Image (cartoon, rainbow, N blue to C red; front, side, top):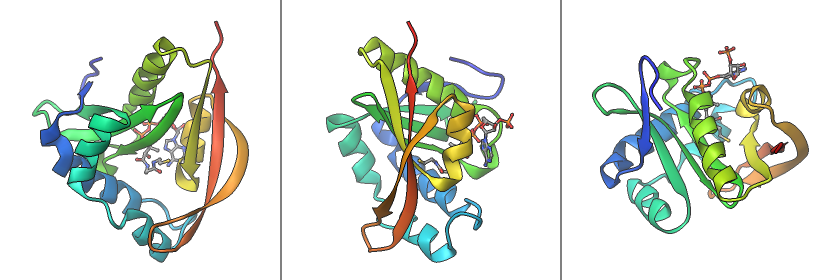
Length: 161
Ligand SMILES: CC(C)(COP(=O)(O)OP(=O)(O)OC[C@H]1O[C@@H](n2cnc3c(N)ncnc32)[C@H](O)[C@@H]1OP(=O)(O)O)[C@@H](O)C(=O)NCCC(=O)NCCS
């Protein structure tokens, strides 16, 4: 899929460093309206480039939005009728990249047979997912690997025939 300023393509191992950096930057740039700075730092901690390569090989499909120089602007990962991660570089947000990644991920999940797609979201992205047609299913707490508790929301979307 091509938009005036970005293209979406499959993940390559050489994306791992850039994806790790943009993932951390996207988390740290979220508003302090939802999580404290300590909570955001905890959510962003422990990310390692090699994990993206391993997860993309073994567990999840990654799609990457890139600019005209093939530099990653955002990514979406998904598996088993679930959106697992969606992050857009702060300077590239509100340009439709997140929506375009979701559409591509949803189309792939539907081809795999999904009739309902779910996502476990942090609070900063709930409005985004609602704009994509998802409804809140439940609320829960997520404990980061270094022990901070974050309020999170599970959302779902039924796929019509
Ligand atoms: C959530 C995220 C992926 C959205 O990506 P994006 O490329 O900025 O999204 P889009 O430009 O496609 O936004 C589509 C619509 O979603 C809604 N939306 C997006 N970001 C929003 C925000 N911060 N607050 C309220 N609504 C928002 C708006 O309705 C927007 O349409 P508009 O720009 O015409 O008003 C991006 O903001 C991000 O990386 N956030 C930080 C990380 C995160 O929370 N990821 C989800 C982890 S579960």
